[in-house]
Image 1: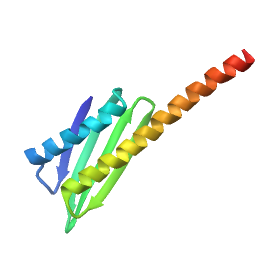
Image 2: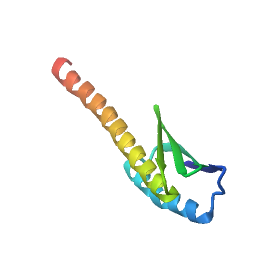
Image 3: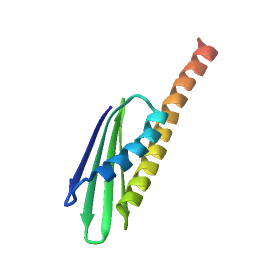
Length: 107
């Protein structure tokens, strides 16, 4: 999996990189077939923004978080991405189970 971390009007420090890498484990536990993850950190006056895009096979999931603290915004971002990834995985599993069920009934 490729991880790209960049900053707009903010220097991405080693502490921020470590914080993102520690939260990355939550995504990889859900799906080990994640192709890439792109995170952009930005500052606008008093608002700290974290935007993330996860590319998985068949979909691209995007989320953003706006908080007063950068570490909190990263946490909220990963919470949103985990929720979206979990929902995407359930859709894929439901479609597969429906196809198998229909094949058993009619096939």
